[in-house]
Length: 429
Image (cartoon, rainbow, N blue to C red; front, side, top):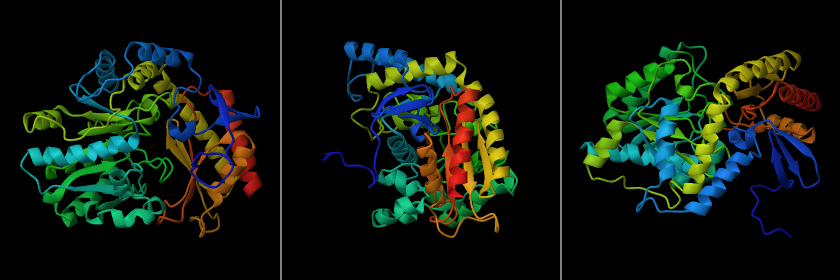
């Protein structure tokens, strides 16, 4: 009997090795990681140079507590990361995962307004659907019915007003204007921040707004004194073909950028915030400290992994590669859509892509969810790992598959992905 507390009651293959876009189990079977785990393994598996960088750091300085020391590797990484993201003057707050990062953004937004003498600002506007993390604050911010339902008594719903998801039928400016109505209803003087994923991930596979959306969002936030927080945990670090997905269509600089997943690409737990100079100065010139922290924040070995990953992303032009390979893969997914009526839409940016599944006779989501899970199981049987989801329509209905192989994926590996998807769709249909 295993002593592991598994996430669900299903059989789990035992993964023993990773190489490039592939994982291998204990029985020797090979799987193409078509979703990079959970859109994490951006540089692929098994990179010895990252492992060696972590080992060097572990021998030299394995741990210091962030309330007592900084470290050379953290200073170097923060400077280089802000240059890569083109966020001059921004500060990097390091944590271990995306949920911690979004918790940090929420608390920082609250403290920023308190330091400015606006202590009535505590609400955070988010969208439905959305996903910002599993911890209670990040989950409260999320608009994902199935993941929230059991914990709803623990969530202060009044603190989290919700805005509708992007609507591709509207211009970006019209779409963003819906934020103004939510602000007015909530009482703009009570709102601290607006948080959104520039390209939606797990909750509504690869949905993105039209051009002009983020520019108008930033304008509305400035008018009402609300911080604009871009959750780039999944979409950032080159995955969408740009260092930051929020800048794919508009020249926008959010007040806070939330980062994760691709920062250390799965080699170590690493996430964080990029914080504007104005927010940093307000907090430091106020109480003099961010009243928040985690034990492993800025862990030197994790940061060393992040630095080695950044070397690879820049040295191998993986951001540009994500854009080019993403266009090819999206074209292949749209060809699948033509052949399979249950695929209502293929969409995405760079190598953050999605298939929306539904009833071809109505063009709507299936009345009962489960199709995405069946397609994912059929793909797994064919050696392809995907990321299924439901609930994008009303919290329950709305099947979709999220796809996002490592940014190093080759043309041949993408053809293998498409063949696996083709077989899985045929099996389920």
